[in-house]
Image 1 (cartoon, helix red, strand yellow):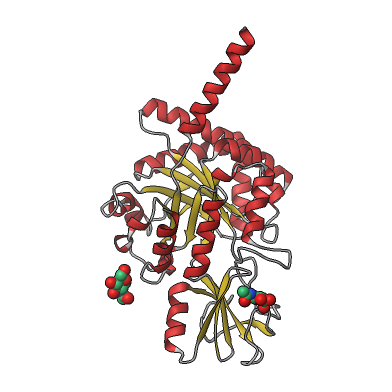
Image 2 (cartoon, protein in one colour):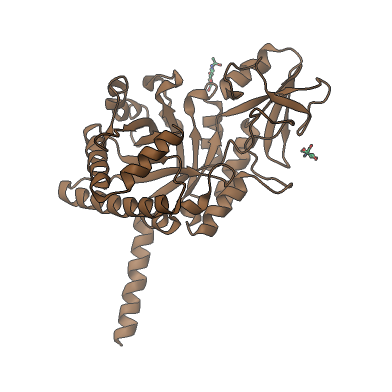
Amino acid sequence: MANSKSLFLVIIFTILISFSSAQGAVKGGYWYSDSGLAVSDIDSSYFTHLFCAFADLDTNTNQVTISSSNAPSFSTFTQTVQQNNPSVKTLLSIGGGGGPSLAADFADMASQASTRKSFIDSSIQVARNYNFHGLDLDWEYPSSDTDKTNFGLLLNEWRSAITQESSTSGNPALLLTAAVAGSNQISLLEYYPAQDIANNFDWINVMVYDLFTPGGYSTQTQPPAPLKNPLGQFSAEEGVTSWIQLGVPANKLAIGLPFYGYAWNLVSANDHGLFATANGADTDATSSGDGSIGYGDIREFINTHSGAQSVYNSTFVTDYCYSGTTWIGYDDTQSISAKVTYAKDNGLLGYFAWQIGSDDNWTLSKTGKYHES
Ligand SMILES: *[C@@H]1O[C@H](CO)[C@@H](O)[C@H](O)[C@H]1NC(C)=O
Ligand SMILES: *[C@@H]1O[C@H](CO)[C@@H](O)[C@H](O)[C@H]1NC(C)=O
């Protein structure tokens, strides 16, 4: 009797939890302060969630801070983007792709209870002071067993602090998300505490891009962010599947959509398919040293180079274009549609774009939105 009653309560409780944590489909996008896109020019109608990137980690105090150059746009971010779309939610993104030294700063912060507390308390305070609806952790990347343990402690303490603050203030709890590596190619996924992630984050943004880049050494053109890879490693599908296998449910995963690609230099203009012979990054189409090029610039490249061809390859789910000895692998509308459909068909929570300032007149943002609904 007692057993069946408690079983009944467990079932009811489980149902309540699964309903209360159910998010509508996430159509997210990162706004990056260095992108050149003014906050007032964001068409927020294409998004359910906008991530404002990036707040910093002060290594002296272990507090979350916003630089003085970002303060004016960050402090009015929510108000500005809600003018177009009153229901859009905003999250303050902390950290970013700052390389090994930033990763070490996060590791240090997470290594002691007192520094974790400074970080957590300040993050909540900054989020409330700046009117964000949530916080997004971009620790790129935890890279040891010690990091994994400390990341888990940080998450558990962060979630309790957020719950506590919500019950004290009476405001809805802040959302808590993270951007995480999408492939062992980028950073070993085993150094993430998957169970703590599943328990404490509202969802995670899986960065399934930069899987193949022209680097210094790349001798053949490759799809930078293929959804599928019949050759084996690596692909967005593999990244998503890895996270599910680690124990994070599909409905807590958002798939990453790159609003940029990479340019390779072809050895011969006549050999211009996928896996054509190449020698590293191209310097004609983009001045970025690593060959990265935003979608808007890719469209401009296609429009200004007569004879430029673009191709969608549905086997890998990638687009590429070429002209002369320039070859660019990227996601155009077909790849974006296929990825959004994949997310929906596989029960993922949704998708996010990095980053919306690279879009071309909202073409990709629009593609995502209308495929999802
Ligand atoms: C995609 O590219 C691969 C490699 O060149 C090729 O084998 C495959 O047939 C292409 N898929 C389509 C649908 O054209
Ligand atoms: C941008 O897209 C809108 C339609 O969504 C169109 O009316 C407008 O002309 C486009 N602007 C440019 C510069 O292409």
